[in-house]
Picture 1 (tube, rainbow, N blue to C red):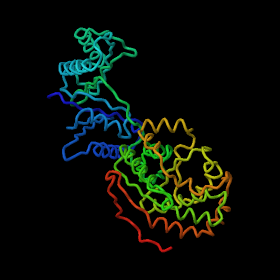
Picture 2: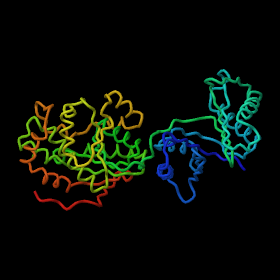
Picture 3: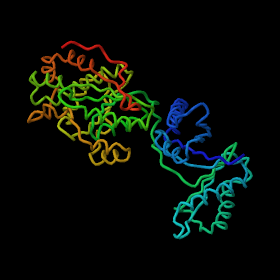
Picture 4: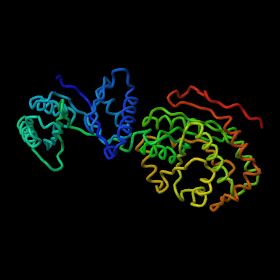
Length: 410
């Protein structure tokens, strides 16, 4: 067998799944293929127990980058796939180590190394310990590097399978979690801030495929917040097969709530309006839950009382992945997943429209029902959803609205 470059993907908690593990694996295989833009024969994915070996014509660095963004994988490990012989194994290890030193500081002290061997096939002529000793001695003599079994600078990993041997000298951290789509679908309420994109990402890590809904203050505000939502959704779609953004203008409805005498209840009334509209849209899209970026106590609308009042307006379960996170934790995660720079951009947030001087921090559904009755809330929800625009972040800049509703007369 001619040595082949590949990337090994190691499962995370997927390993713990029982009889339904196959369903999780099918979602993972689909997501890996999608991430690599797979055609008929590329990528080629080999299943080896709890490991996937991916072979692709993509440039190796690009292949690794894309695989590191697939949720459901704990370790991304570039490797050489070689024949199942000791000589092929040793040659592969030396080749990878020579390539490694070409990209490191040669004036530094010689690195320490260790060999970690795992033999899934017992028909291989060497045991795991013998592989480590024989390969380690060859590396020590040829590279003149010292052995260090605890915390070495370089680990040479050898995995002997039933058909081939995989040799690697580097590992990258994967996203972990469960494969996107393996636990259902959700509709994520996406604002332009730090919180909601992180909440959507955390929901994806629990296996939820997320579509997005964004509420704008139009016609009372400009399009800047919608542009941010498109950009955030496009960034989040690195972690899942492409989903779409549903942009819902609620500026006129917000004014209706204000003229209905909402007063200090305005913010909570707006939140209930958004949740009602999102739940209605979610049912149409086949979503099984809504996802929000609420963090307990962060702002006035996110007191325990107000969160309960808002949740009562939803006909879908309301998931809050960040409920116990503080702002520093949220911003750190936003930086890690790549949404922070977009969230920092200025926009016109619909939530700041018509904000009263004092905001109620303790509300009940009965209080809000009075305001919503005056505003004829069911008709209001129908009106705002009638003007929904749909856009695919993959086609950013091209307006796509195949499912626009017929307008509702004022």
